[in-house]
Length: 74
Image (tube, rainbow, N blue to C red; front, side, top):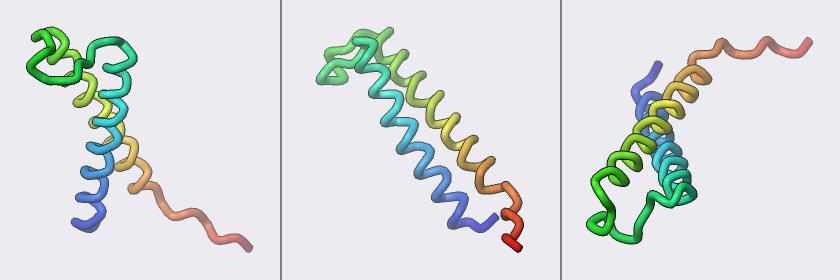
């Protein structure tokens, strides 16, 4: 796999995981307008959500990138 593809997978996976984690944290009422206004538990939950979804998206994008090309149509 080329370096450009690897960097794209990491960048897109991190971006999508951050967006998903923050939206879920906001929906679960764990997100506050300022980082300093959040309790330690809320910070940990938000960080765990972002890390978890970032890893999931990176794994899915990597799996997709490693798939063999589709056969040509006859």
